[in-house]
Amino acid sequence: MAGNGGREQWTSRLGVILAVAGSAIGLGNFLRFPTQAALHGGGAFMIPYFCALIFLGLPLMWLEWALGRYGGLWGRHNLPGIYDVVSRRRWAKYLGVLGIYVPFIILVYYTYVESWTLGYSAFSALGGFTGIGSREGMGAFLDAYLGYGQGLWCLPTAALGFLLITLALNFCVIYRGVSGGIEKLNLVAMPLLFVMAVVLVVRVLTLPGAGEGLNFLWQPDFGKLRDARVWLAAAGQIFFTLSLGLGAIITYSSYLRRQDDVALAGLSAASLNELAEVVLGASIAIPAAVVFFGTVETVRIAQGGSFSLGFMAMPLILQQMPLGAFFGALWFLLLFFAGLTSTVSLIQPIVAFLQDELGWTRHRATLALLAVTAAYLVPVVALQQFFVDEMDFWAANILLAVGALIEVLMFVVVLGIRKGWQEINTGAKIRLPRVFRYILTYVTPVYLVVMLGSWIWQQALPKLALVGVSAEARPFILAARLAMLAVLVAMSLLVWYAWRRGTAGRAAATEMEEAANVG
Amino acid sequence: MSAEALVMMLISWGVILAVAGYCLWRLERDR
Image 1 (spheres, each protein chain N blue to C red):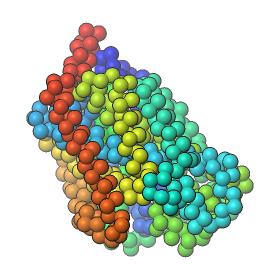
Image 2 (cartoon, rainbow over the protein chains, first blue to last red; image 1 turned 60 degrees about the horizontal axis):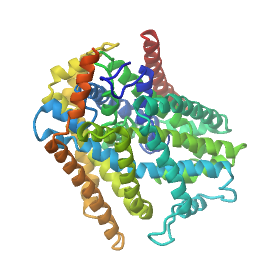
Image 3 (cartoon, rainbow over the protein chains, first blue to last red; image 1 turned 120 degrees about the vertical axis):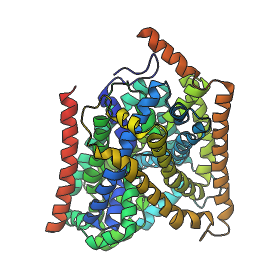
């Protein structure tokens, strides 16, 4: 599979599919999904979940693959550049700023959380949790690891060490390029991830009482379907799990050729993600929690959220099993691999922007981004309890949905659904039902607007007004917001500067010229 | 495990495994 001209390219179809699946499969597949399902009707949750997959997830997935490939044909691999060629209007590139801003914000805190999984994998293997017998004890261990209660600006040594290793691994992959780094990583990491997940599923499902664990997760409560919040939770889960609205899939697919299929590839990547989430992800943490803690306590754990399940309950559960050190290390290594394949997909859109629009080399762009990410991580590590939640809420909830809505409008209105539908079907190895054209035009935007509207109304407005935030936490929360705002302004200025300086698209022009000469 | 829970689990898994299997088959066939 050749790419565009003499620049970055995928070398195999499997490589790009696994890369997109790797981007989508993250910690949420193994932690967020089972807690959401357990809290929102069990087996009945799958009804709104599959509806959201059909009306929101798959159409957006195909849209992003097609939009990315379209942009790549113009030598653009980043959202500001792609919106510029799609619309040809001066303002369009600024809408694409979210396609580099949101990945950066998520990258910063997600890398930190990812590094915890690496650290916990090492602690599990070396017996670091020995003697801890309760969730409260595990909570205290996590607090100590993160340096809570040791003074505000006291940086935790172990956490910093694992963070540096994680950062180095991520940026080494990007430094080596699309085929030499990202593709090779995913060709190795994704099969390994599935093998690790299958081993853990077999271990959990062969525990005495595992049937009760599965029953707890899958017992349908159809009465919950009358609650709109369940439908919103399902839509949100589909949206997050497929890495939509980020710009990551768009960047990855921009390294495809004109005649490369996006319909089957998009469906394949989505189905791999669903396999990892619904079949494997649902069969590890919650069933294991039920076996060890019982159903009442598992509900409490699930209500505590993904961190409570992943970092407080699971280490306790796994260390009580025979070969607990091995299975504990395997569990956190699985999460680490899931995180690593996701974070590299967050770095690539920003590096592609610096290459395409500022004319930087890949190595220069990678090192510059590493320096900026490391600088931003200093307050995040020191003030994690204030920064991470704030960054996660605004970037990974609100702005992600805003970004997706802009994508749909760009594709359906600006590019035009007729041309857009042609783009999806160009080179397609499967014939997509025409009904998806109408779903993409009418249903997906409505789904997004309702989801976004409800989040703004129910969560964003109270959060913006700092409802329930203590007086001493307020300055730190405001500092977190100020830092995020500063990055947004800086990135918007960078886009303005690239176009004003005339470097925007120059690399693309050279790339297309080279391609024409080769042709 | 109750019959209802088993049915919901098998339907969900079945749909996903069928689609994933179909995709793999098509990818292999068109290689």
